[in-house]
Length: 263
Length: 222
Image 1: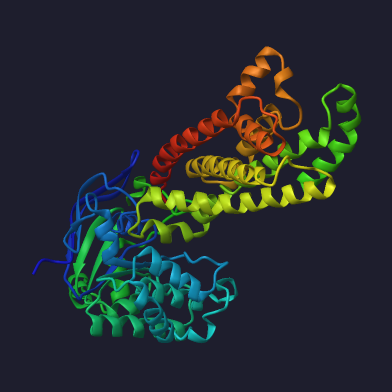
Image 2: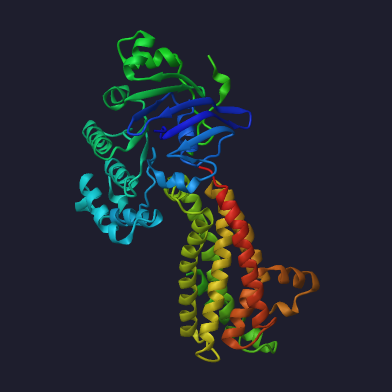
């Protein structure tokens, strides 16, 4: 069985800046994989390349057997994604957002209604299906996005900091859905986060990247053993150092990295 | 609101002068121009939605979907054009209230066709420009810089046939000129270039613009 995500010698440059520097790793089908790193380490750039939003400078990425560069549409059908900031249409209702997604992804018309109902019930938004998304709280939007990302039955689910800014109740809820989904449907999950407790709780394996380089890869236990630390948080600091990173000051998320800050 | 103001102010203000110059009823001349103007404004500025979506997320949802970029671009353009078309129809209806009259009921169909063509072309143009830009201020600036010359050169307000040479040349390069001419021709029967030429120029350039716009759109990175 081939690995569902294969990243080989991935490199991404923005002009002079190297955002991702020769990263290779594989993710097995059904695995929950965490991508960790300080701000500006290259996590989001990596995710963008994996999800066809950005072309790589060098290297190869195979998602579900398809090359990201040569078969982008097959790759896009294979995954669902929840971005860090909402990507819903605020002027549509929850149901309309779901319906739009179903049409975009070619979900068969007969199945649309059932799937939408089922997913909205899972994320407990069925009562609010006819409300405009702009009236939703941050947590509700996130739940709606998770439901939407799963609508076309993806084999891989990308979550970019899915729980940032949410209260512990909502965080727990979200991970419960995702874990359940992973166990029942065997969906492969790849997520980024800054909360190490989440990684310890849910991830099978984690990769730590820093300054565009892969600095550690293994199960949370292996990472702790390698760093000889008690907690994953300490292990993370062991691998990535203690200085605070400055992120470039635009919220568009472009060109986040400057490589001259190597400590 | 603005088009209505133009319609009323200009037709009452310049109407008598126009008549005395032997050009006939100014409202009959002006109304198609004002309809074209309202479509132009609404169409071009709809590009701002793309920039909005780039900054606030929704565009990402469509960009990770298994749909070709050119389809997304065409879809967005037709969506924006729909608003502009309704705007044009609304102004047409209002111009009837002010006293505008068409040569026949059938001519309304031709007018609708030209309203659609103008709307689609300029929405595609707005979308293409918006694909290149990241901030709203820049987009506003470019649009303000473009929109007035396009409007004044198009012969929407005054007969472009009597322009001096240079202006006449520029006017022929203004795509809106053909839209206004087609629209005016359909509604009042008075053409400068003729229906066929207007139609061909607009539809050919729209196709070209879709090709260019599709390329620009597929280069969007977020």
